[in-house]
Amino acid sequence: MSGISIIGLGNMAGALADRALAGGNAVEIIGRDPAKAKELAATLGGAAVGTAGAAPAGDIVILAVPYAGAAAVVSEYGDALQGKVVIDITNPVTPDFQGFVTPDGSSGAQEIAKAAPAGVHVVKAFNTLFSHVLAAGPAEGRLLDVFIAGDDAQAKARVSAFIESLGLRPMDTGQLAMARTLENVALLQLGLVAHSIKHTNFFLGVSILG
Figure 1 (cartoon, rainbow, N blue to C red):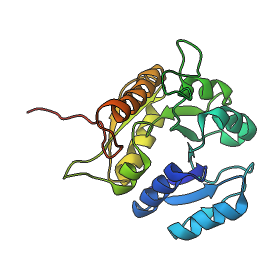
Figure 2: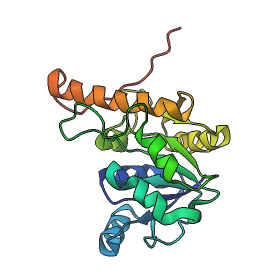
Figure 3: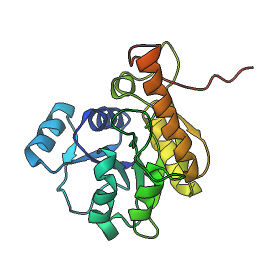
């Protein structure tokens, strides 16, 4: 099991923390509002509360913050992230949900990696799951698929083991450049919500045919 530090206090932070605790992981909640961080930790039971700006306790650090502030958070922590794996769950979509705010040819994960100190490995994961779907877990007997991308094999192995502890299925898609594709999958999901499915009670996964 892993030590997990979650930076953020939103719905995804809560869903990830809850599943991580259920999977036997040590969880630290970090937010700029200490009172809200304590409140979230209290609702979960078993989570510790960290101090914003101090070195995260976990060996895996999850950025559960809006993309607009994610790179700044990584820059702020700087060398305190050395030796840790950073999971980027963000989707850098434009306000009209028609494109991305990242430079052409890049992705949110790649921009966050640029802001990280040398030696810190960024892994893209969880960006294609809605928070309430993640919180509910396996659906109709099927494990939820968590697509991941990253440049370091050992970092992806650590993230994959963490995902399995949540009762989910990791699906490695390749190098960190594949984060662009995963962010496009999230955009696809938003298109489905707007034009065909009309709700967010679904997930995209892989069915392996015999």
